[in-house]
Length: 118
Image (tube, rainbow, N blue to C red; front, side, top):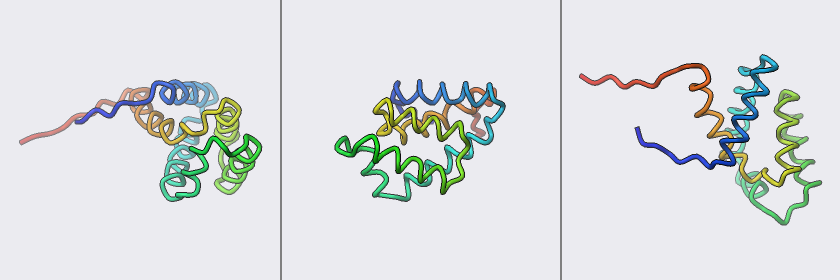
């Protein structure tokens, strides 16, 4: 397996989100939200540009996050997390956070990756 380097900031945010999800017993719900967000980002060039554009105001980004949360029926934990990203100027790391979240989740579940050869 090739190792993909994860952004340390994204890894910390993903880990924090997983901590909160576990504490609230909503890991599966947040996992679904993060997978949906990942698919939404991947499928929208406009959203990708918005995430990375420092010229777009916090208010505009917050409005977009609110619209995405409402349309995607995201859990309150996920919605609040996205708002924290906007407040901290880290919305541009969302794609990396989704990747880090997906990588951390199996570890938290105690899953081990194995490959079978003949």
